[in-house]
Amino acid sequence: MTDCLFCKIVSGDVPAKIVRESDRTVAFRDINPQAPTHVLVIPRDHHPNVAALAAADAELLAELLREAGQVAAGEGIDGTGYRVVFNTGAQAGQTVFHVHAHVLGGRGLNWPPG
Ligand code: 5GP
Ligand code: ZN
Image 1: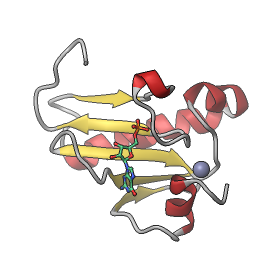
Image 2: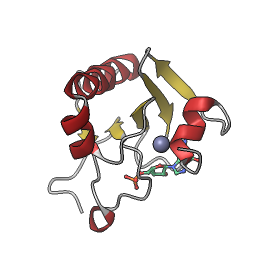
Image 3: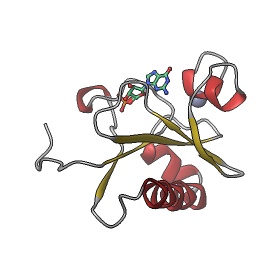
């Protein structure tokens, strides 16, 4: 999608601090980190949210989650703990409508979230 920010990160038209890449996914640091580790993992293909991705391509969703785990391991937070979040819809705080897993960790995380 030409007007999608995260599609532009996939294509390289918008720069990002890339952490990891796979054939079908890209992981990069959030521009406004909410924890010492805050990485976004996205599919290269455009899907608007996690439910749409699950319906369209369950294997790609599985790859996204495997990559999220690899990001956590690479950041050294897989032992201490981390959170994988898919904000879905405006009231849940979704602002970019290209599905992305937030990988958050490196500090204690409150539950329930705000
Ligand atoms: P959402 O609010 O949709 O769940 O998450 C979108 C995330 O994208 C936010 O955490 C926001 O900080 C991040 N973000 C927005 N614009 C950019 C950008 O241009 N580059 C990067 N790296 N992150 C961005
Ligand atoms: Zn997109």
